[in-house]
Image (tube, rainbow, N blue to C red; front, side):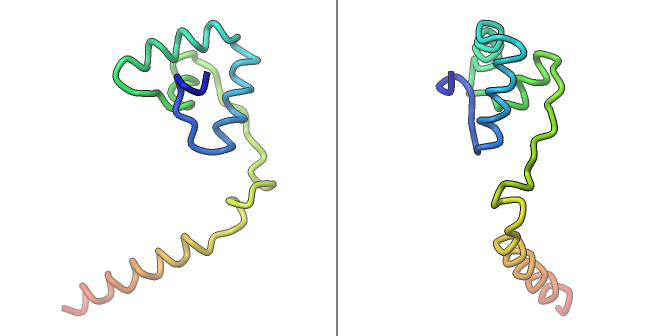
Length: 88
């Protein structure tokens, strides 16, 4: 079913498994085909379309939840650029 839905990361993959268990494969596939007339829908769009509340995923076990080094690097660069712009 991943050929019908845009899966960006492991959290999306887990959410898709949960959604298929709750709503059923046929219902999820129909929703994906209806939403995907022009492009692949995100998993979150399927949740909204089907009226299902996404469960809270445990992101603490994910490396992405604890490693902020990339974000901190880019925030520092943005702050530098803003400071240069404000000094003009």
